[in-house]
Amino acid sequence: MTDHYDALETRPPAAREAELFSRLPEVLRKAMAAPAYAERLRGIDPAGVTSRAALAGLPLLRKSDLPALHKSSPPFGGLVSVAPGSFGRLFTSPGPIFEPEATHADPWRGARALYAAGFRPGDVVLNTFSYHLTPGGFIFDASARALGCAVIPAGPGNTEAQFELIEAYRPVGYSGTPDFLKILLDAAASAGRDVSSIRRALVSGAAFPASLQQEIKSRGVDAYQAFGTADLGLIAFETASHEGMVVNEELIMEIVRPGTGDPVAPGDVGEIVVTTLDPHHPWIRLAIGDLTAALPGPSPCGRSNMRIKGWMGRADQTTKVKGMFVRPEQIAEIGKRHPELGRLRLVVSREAEADVMTLRCECASPSGELQGEIAATLRAVAKLGGQVELVGPGLLPNDGKVIADERKPA
Image 1 (cartoon, one colour):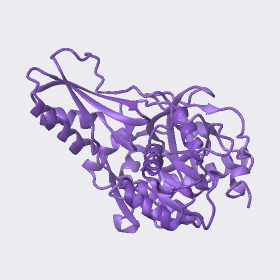
Image 2 (cartoon, rainbow, N blue to C red; image 1 turned 30 degrees about the horizontal axis):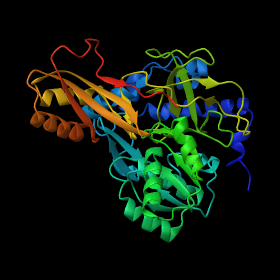
Image 3 (cartoon, rainbow, N blue to C red; image 1 turned 60 degrees about the vertical axis):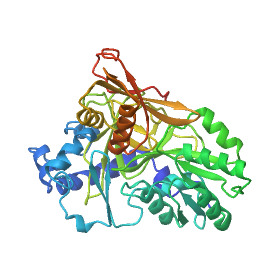
Image 4 (cartoon, rainbow, N blue to C red; image 1 turned 45 degrees about the horizontal axis):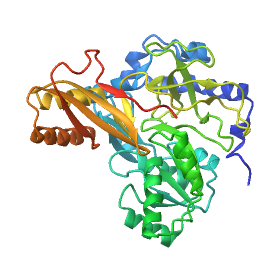
């Protein structure tokens, strides 16, 4: 077995660049068959977009704009030219944003990330990402099966059932959030259950700070991080060098100054913008709202693509909690459902190596009953549970911020 998935990962950077940009004009032509892209790219000659400089001249498509686009022109906002029935699976994420899954093998481009984390054909993988409506579970399921692994579609929660599956099938690999991996290992230790077969993990969807990395490693599990979205699949991933994340093949990443489409200087922090080359569902300069910076030079592991530092915060107030995006629009919806409230601010923090949400609400007449009603609304709107804190009128800052992410980047 080699250390690399295929020869594409170690080709000269100039060869990769030439190959990607030779394919881009045809992808642009296919994209412009969809009405929204036809409007956005009006006047653009695809034949002339063969370099990063030319690509940077195209308008950004902001992920934060997708819910409104999808609502105005369901299901895909006019960004896809083929019918929903042309895809294999159809998902939705909070917003709502509707995501289709292509029918070809490894549609989310995750097999490389698993391979870099040490997964190999014939491995059994416990996949604990959710399989319900959102694509997370299927992203890692399809990627593992494309690599030749057998997948236990466990989903999150229900540790007792997880123990039975682990003891029966003896999976060597885990995919899921780092938080749930810790929960699983802690619960197994408390209950005297044998989960020692799990030796490696590919984690995503939540912060993986150094303290938690060290704890997981001390339990005998070699864990790697992957960075991706429900729209794009796996964007970048850690390798054996553990020095940043290597950008995935088959996509073009730019790092731009937040609020603009202009590329930053090498090494500067900026917003991630991704262009994909799937002609059936292309993404042209999708600005995902996450911040990162490029690392200089090739990875010590031998992969030659761009390296990034990983997730370094949000360019906007949308944030990810326990693998799910929470948006300012959702906080506004809570306010509409409870007009007796004043300003709202969702504070996201970490406690005991897990994400925690606290919704702070200005309220002239606080009560335990109202607090419970707001907590139920928060769960209904955000699809996540959180604490609710009621404060007096005028006690929250008047700065326009409705989501405050107080977690430190890993």
